[in-house]
Structures are given as structure tokens and as C-alpha cells.
Image 1: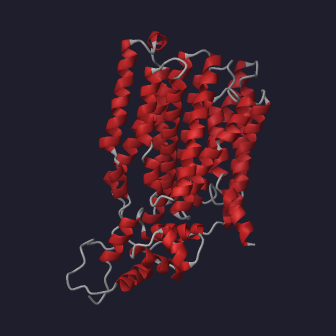
Image 2: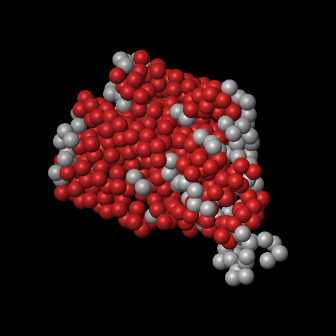
Image 3: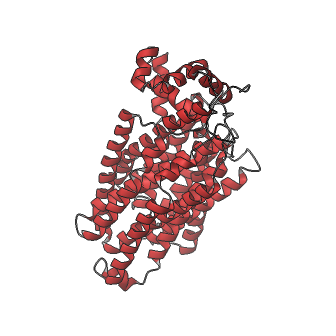
Length: 479
């Protein structure tokens, strides 16, 4: 029975991968949007429509539970997204221009609703799970997404498009099965969101997304249609292999802070990717584009993980925090894409040797580095997760003689830890590693990681150092 539950849990970890594969196929290939259509214009329309969908779902969820929590919400999202994708695939093939525009409008409305509703329902789930569990949901799903992506890419038209239409259904089926995932109780540990840091995070997201959107809309104007398709495939191959290796390394190393692990590759990958993309404009530039893809996908995962986690800790409605982060990202992507779309054609045709184009590229690189070094650093990310045990957050008084066990018990009662989690907490504070927990408690490594992840979530922290700080500040009420 236990083996069965483990198998189901592992199966859950790739559920979002089908949603992500849909994004990759629709926005990065000609499987759905055919070459005969204005592909860049349609891609912009899809980005804008999905962004509007996020805003609508975010707003509607504040007034009614029907959007995300009714029994019909998941099947409606699946039908809307799949049906809209199918209509979108057919719209460009309709000979009558007016009828084609009507079909396109219907498709965009259906896709925007289904896409947003499905993603927000995944976000609702993640806001109730342990941080480590959500991290595995994300990086394994993103790594897995490249498999269905390449299946669609290599299948002949329209088979690849039809397969893509089934991805939302697959993601929804897995989401339904995730009802068995163990949920966390709200923590009683105080947490106040630092709005200044949150604003800096939003600026960081927008800046990086602008750079991503602009580079991706430069590509179709540098190559012919066939060359662009091959370029995207090679870029995705580089990104898929690297992201798979990254996900494997996280699974094996089990980082203390999933958010920090996802933040680290973002700026380096995007900076090296942009440099490679512009320095080697010929056949090797796909490597740079692949690195850019890794960076932006890590940013997406960080957005989803951090926004749902902070919503849980600060007791903010998950759709609100999740929606603000997602909309910031999509607005940045749209602005960058639209800016390049509106560039004078001679400037783009001259790329990458035109001086003005090189200036724009170097300016983007400078903005990227500044964003990572000044706007929102890893230290800012860690500060965003600081959750003081008490409003004073002061050092313990000199006369405090309570023992480590007493301090751990105080913290455990305040945060609602289980008896087993309290036991693990005390061992963590006494310096035990995950392997040490396994040996001392005679439990599997996966179980130990699960307990540690639950403790982090309930205490409102992202690393072991913060756990030590909370326990250190804890004191009996009579002192």
C-alpha cells in the first residue's frame, strides 16, 4: 500500500509539465500557429490574451469560489484550453478572413480562460504543500515538458497539433489525482511581508522578462522560417538537457532552500546566453538561446514557488500573490516582444552587425547584470523569507537559561509542529544532517527531507540558519 502511494506521488510531480509543454509548443513552434499566418503577431496576441486571463481569474477569485474551487472548475479549464487550442490551429486555415478573425477571437478567449484557470488551480495546490514538495513539482515538471514538446515538434501536421490539444486534459487529470497530497495546516508563526522587497522582486521579474521577450522576437527576423524552426529545436535541446541535469542535481543534493537553488542560475545563464547569442550569430547562437531559456524557466519556477509559499506564510489569498507575480512576468515578456515587433525593419535585417543593434544588445546585458546585482539579489530573496518569531525579533536576554529542548518545544507549539516534526526540529538544531536524521530516527531519506520541508514551511523560513535563529529567540512566557 505504501509503495502505491509513493508511485502516485511521483506521478503527480510531472503534472504541470503538460501545461508547460503546451506553452512551449504554442509559443515556440509552428505546430499550432502555421507559417502562413502572421506568426509573431499571433504569438503576441496569445501572450496578451493569457495575461488578460490571469488578471480576470485573479479578480474573479476574490468574489466567488466558482472560478477555481467548484467541482466543474477543472473540467471546464481542460475543455476551454483544449478546445481553444484546436480552434486556434484551424483559424489560420479558414479561407474567409472575417470568419478566420472570429474563430481566432473565440480561440484566444477560450485559451486565455483555460490556461489561467488551470495554472491558478495548480498554484492553489502548491500553497498548501511543503516547499520542498512544490520545488520538486516544478523542476521535474519543467524538465519533463521537453519530452512532449519534441513529440509534437517531430510529428507531422496536424498530428502534433492534435497531441498538443490533449496536454491540458492530461494536466487536469493529474491535478485531480493530487487531491491525495498531504496538506499543511496554516502556521501560527508571525510573518509580515516586506512590501519594499516585494516591489523590488516585481521590478526584477519585469526587467528579466522584457529581455527574454525581446530576444525571442529577434530570432524569427534573423533567420528564414526553416532556419528558425531548426534554431528553436536546437535551443530547446540544449535547454532540455541542461534543465534535466539541473533537476537531477537538485533531487540528489536536496538543497536546504529550494528558492535559493532556483535563483542562482537565473542571471548567470541569461548573461552568458545573451553574450553567446550575440557574439556567435551564426550556427552556434542556439547554445546562447538555450542558456537564455534555462534562465527564464528558472525564473518562472522561482515565481511560482515563492509566490505561493509567501501567500501561505503571510496568509494572503493565493490567487492574489500568484497572480501579481505571473502578470508581472507576462507584462515584461509582452513589452519586450512588442518593442522588437515594432522595430524598423532595416535595423533588424542588419543585425547582428548593425551598431545600433549591438548597442541595444549591450544595454540589455547591462540591465540584466544590474537587475541581479542591485535590483533584487539573492540576499534580498533570503530577506523576503525572514519571518520573525516575535515582533521584537531581539536577541535572547542574558538571564535566559532555558534548554534547547524547551526552546524547540516552544517553537513547535507556536508553529503547530507534529510530535515527529518536533523531534526532527531538535535534532536539526543540534546539528544533525539529513543523513544523521535517517540514522538516528531509522527513517528513509525521503521521509527525513519531507519532515524538514514541513518544518521550514510551518516556521516560515527557507534555510536551516533561520531555524536556528527562531529557536534561539524562543523563550518561556514567564521569563
